[in-house]
Image (cartoon, rainbow over all chains, first blue to last red; front, side, top):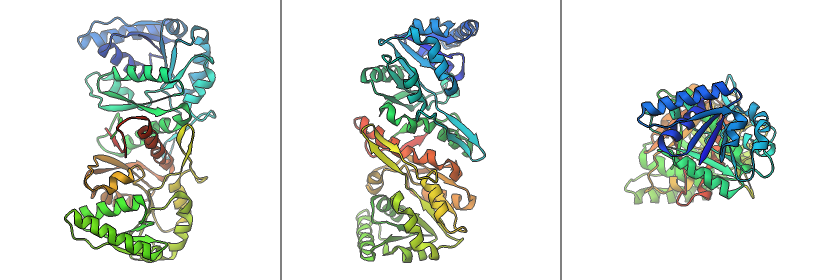
Length: 222
Length: 222
């Protein structure tokens, strides 16, 4: 499987790239608006993975080229860049691809972090609206602390929740998630319930902020 | 400490009553609109706890009498009964009491369970609006599966998230939660972020519904 991480120079992209590169045989392609930044990030991740004993060659391209080469495309961009990122790669996508969104809308005020969903109801629904009609959309990887994911010495032992309306695309992403050591993927239903998953992201930030010794939090359902 | 569970004949009330009666010295008072129902439930819980080797006497009263006798009052009623239940006990509450709300607004459609917050933003905020001004309000115990809580042979090993604007009331409820074996209480911030906690309840239902072998789910932050 070839996986493109669009906006893969950012922190969640880094974490997913490193984990997939270290634990799987999947080809990992880093995308960015800036091809040089993508190239540099890919080289850096290649080095980090080599430091952990595995020779893998990650590659970097401008987002559209990265998407063109991949079977699964993960939108590692903030919610306000989701729509324009999809626009910039739309003609490279078709019904054999899967578009994955890990983003959650968050606002912060004096009370803490709060969910700030787009008018579509959730970022996942926004992605589904913006994606070409024949391209299946999956929400996943929302609730993984990027710092912990990128620290290859950190054990995970946590869950990710996966939502999609297309069962085959959902199963593909669940399998990719479970390829990462210590990550369990749970089916949370369809895109209509994505808001509840995206709400967990600000909650994790609030819990980490208010309790000593809890940083880079994840969650396990039990 | 004396704890009143208003609407304590229902499933979450049963679970909290049994756990506190079995694991602590706190006096547990069951409240109901119907005093006979409260009395019967208290007798039943007393018997269940005795079956687990502990002689405790739980008592049952009409909600206002139960509230009058207690230091901590837990509103174990559905969201649409929160306001009228508070009205019915308001003159028994004062600033030495703590009012606790475990309720979450949930709706269900074809897509699954979804958060359905009242116009106040969360059930916790609704309770804070409805409570007398001097009575501190704490949100807690939202994400505990009632069936698992009431099964005294079931291990918990899960977390509950606690929100309040009054720190002293919050600490009191965190301590009460941690008196229950296997339950860890985490400070999730103020009432302004309660919606994110209440959203976790429908999420747990969706995850349980979509994954084999996961029933009566709770959550652990890690």
